[in-house]
Structure formats: structure tokens, C-alpha cells
Amino acid sequence: MQDQGQEAARKTAADDNRATLPMDPRERRRAFLVLTIGLMCTGFSQSVVYAILPPIARDLGLSELQVGSIFVLSSLFWVLTTPWWGRRSDRLGRKVSVLIGLFGFSLSMLLFTLTLEAAQAKLLPLAVAFPLLIVTRSLYGLIVSAAGPSSQAYVADRTSRDERTRATATIGAAYGLGATIGPGVSASLVILGILVPFYFTVLLGLLSALLIWAYLPERERPVPTARKVKLGLFDRRITLNLVNGGLISSAQAIMIQTVAFYMMDRLSLPLDHAAQYAGIGLMAASLAALFGQLVIVHRFRMTAPTLERTGLGITAVAFLALGLAHQIGPLVFALTMVGLGQGLARPGNAAVGSLVVRRHEQGAVAGLSNATNAFGFLIMPFIAMPAYRLDPALPYFIGTGLLALAIVLSIVDPNARRAGERGADGYDVDDTDDPMQTL
Image: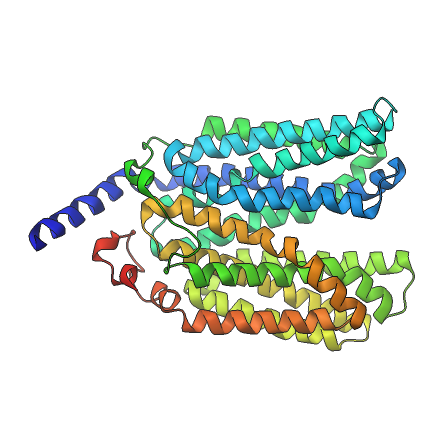
């Protein structure tokens, strides 16, 4: 019986390797480039909507609560469907799933923009336009959530364990780069019309989908054993890793949702100045995150657990500094360090999750990992804002505590420790030979 089990293990491992052979380096670079362009478009779109929708909505007569509900419901559907899309990519194939996400991105953005256009032209009453905005933006969360985990899984399929942390960081940087340049580009396009940036994102989505259709190679068949994948939140290999992902996301949400109010109250600034300084601080944070992902990760070649803990430590200290700062200089510097820490912690966390599961589970774990990115934005409005009313610095002290907890969990998690110790030079192995699977 033992011999039969070992033979089955060797056969499964061989099947995994045949299904996802490494690519020619030139072909792989081209594939990763078109994926990067696609994810940049989704990041660009997200930041454009956050920047432009509020003034449009106010002009239409929508309240802040109504605008918030549009964002929250979209994020909710993103969280709920991302794990499903990750598992689905194991069956459909990564390329098909990415294309579904990007074509869905263009379709949902077009419907969303046309609804706004009709409402502005008084062709739709607000009582009809508001539900349609919720539906079309929810469609965005439902379908676009396919692109992220499928892209991450595509990269995981075609990188060795040693390469995966750096590749994951590059993919994460693509979304961040799109989000960073989005407000600047949209500010230029608004001159042509308030909705022109939205139509521009529709065009970008279509072009990136066509690039991926034409230039993203995927000759391998979907992995047959993917039908049996039951990877979930309570799988012992990834539970603590996913909790950490949620903690990282929660800290990021605290910063984004409170920083403008914080600068206004802490520095006694008028609304326009507070918005200006908050924009400068968030831009600095985004650039620092990109520096971490594109420079530090590639230059220092830290293991995934070390990268995650380093980023968590930097972010925790920066959050503490935010809570104690009373001048614009220290505030902007602390925001910059938050961005740097997040830029290291997020890809480290994603890479740990990828390294502790088998190859045919990459889509499932990528879906769960991507879902944690939106988790904090769902729950933090109900925690951070009440805490802010008690004391403007309190949300940042809460964030410091959450990040300290994440550091502890990363240290005590045996799977995270072993992710940095084993198999660094090879491709993923079968879990029947892997003691991590029995923990």
C-alpha cells in the first residue's frame, strides 16, 4: 500500500509539472508585460472612479451615503466572487478568465458611464439612475474580480519558487501604478468633459483585453485535478496567511478613509488645503509602494516571509508616527513610510500563500488572497470612523495594533516559516510528499 501511495504521489507530481512547464524567457517576459498592462488598466479605472464620481454624484443630487453604498456593494461583490473566480481559472484556464475580467471591466464601465450620462441629461430620474448605478458598479465587482487572481495564478504557474516573490511584487505594482497615474490623467481629460475619463477607461480595457487575447500564450490545458480543489479559508496551510492579508488591508483602509479628515483636524486646515495635502501624502505613499515593489523586492531578494514581516514592521512604526504627528512634514513622511511598508508586506503575503499550496491550487489561493485586498474596505468604515470621532489619532493606534498582531501571526505560522526554507530553487512539488500539508 505504501509503494502504491508513493507511486501515485510521483505520478501526480509529474502531471503537475507537465501541465505547467516553464516558458521560454522571451515569451514569458512578453506574457507578463501584457498582464501588467491589463492590471494597470483596472487600477487606473478604480482611482478614476474614486476621484470623479463624488463631484458628479453631488451635482446629480446623490448624498455621500448613497455614493458610499455604490462603492461598498461593489467591494462586497468583489470579496465574495474573487475566490470563486480563482478556482474557476483552474478549470477554464488563466487566459480565458483574465479575458472575462477585462471584457467585463469594459462592459460594466460603459454601462456605468452611460447611466451617468443619461442622468445628467435628465433622461433618467434619480430614483431610476441610482439603482442602475448600484447594479452596473456591482457588475464591475462581480466580473472584474476574475482578472486579478487569474493573473496572479498565471504568474505562479510559470515561475519557480525562488522567482515568485519578485514576480508577485511586479504584478502588484502594476495595479498600484495604474492607481497612481489615474487621478493625474483624469484631471487632464476632464477638460474635454467630466465623463471623458470614464470612456477612456472603457477604451483602455478593450485594448488591454485585445493585447492579452493576441499575445498571452497558454498552450497548457486546465489542470484536470482542479475539479477536486476544496481550498478554503480554514485550510490550515493558508488560514493565518489570509488573516494577515485582511489585517494589511484593514490598515490600508484606515489610512485612506481618514487621512483627509485627519489633516483637516490635526493641522486646522480648510477643506481645500486638507484635500491638497492629503493628495500629496497619498501620492507619496503610492510612489513609495512602487519603489518597494519594483526596486527593493528585486534588489534584495528577500524570502517571502521576511519581506512580509519587514513591510509589516515598517508600516506599524509609520502608523504609530501618524498618530503622534502634529505637523505636515512628519505626516507626509509617515504616509510615505506606510506606502513603502505596504509595498513590501502585500506581495510578501501573497507570495507566502502561493508557496504553501500545490500548483493546481494556485488559482484558488490567488482568489482568496485577492479577496483580502478589499476586506478592510468593507469593515473599516464601521470601526475607523466611530473611533475617529472619539479621537482623531485613535484609528492609527488601532492600525498599529492590527499590524503588530500580523507580525506575531507571521512569526508563529509554521507554514509561513517553511515557505522561506524549502524548495527555493525548484518548481512546486506534490503535497503528498510535503510535510506542510499534514500540519
